[in-house]
Length: 345
Image (cartoon, rainbow, N blue to C red; front, side):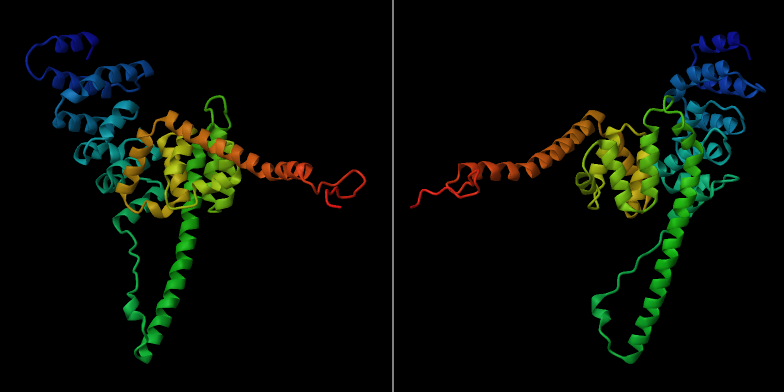
């Protein structure tokens, strides 16, 4: 279909013009064997302004068509993936235009419906598959009833011993699983991100991100806090206070001040606070908070932390100066000869 055909469709006055133009443009694009970048850009320029004016049926049709297209326009695919799963499913299952990072972000924003469709992808990244399985069957942590802890019969002691043994084994297995997950996640992210980190001019701040990400994934809080102090130019004690409690708000502001994308900020935060994101809604809340936090507000908070660091330095130096002034004004000041001056006879 030529551009003149598109113009003829566009000038029609009957209802449904946007629907026909939307479908015809995508159909014509999918018939191209190897579209150029210019043609991909033209399709996005034509279809994205029409997106809100077309029906779910048209969006479903376009999603199905683009899911089989090897060179699908990324912006249009991402827009369709944000639709309900009955529209987005073909793209979530088959499209090559959706990266692993896109899949993680989609799971965070839309939860299990999108996750179940993504689980049907061929050659799905094992880390993403593990995340989906965790969402499908979250681990239940049982809290023992304090009243049931009183040993009433000898059998209770044996049962408690078995439970303790099982608990220790479960903790050990959990630690191994966590380390394996960190290793796989590190491997997955390194493929794209460390190539960018080698090109500092192409992606400003990538060195800082890689350092924070790697120290966070070690599981050693001190390593991460040291890297955070270097990144924000604050002292270690202030950096430690930002992650000292189970509230990620200070860390969120710190990462926003560094102008990280939301998926990078989330990766660092979930590595530092893995227990705070047990379900998709918690992930979605974090992404919403990060998106709504203005960078100027975050920078103002960082300036406050820097001022606090300076204040600490001045306060620590103040006692020595105060003591010297007190000694020089005292009746008991030491004279150059080493004798105490005294007004008493």
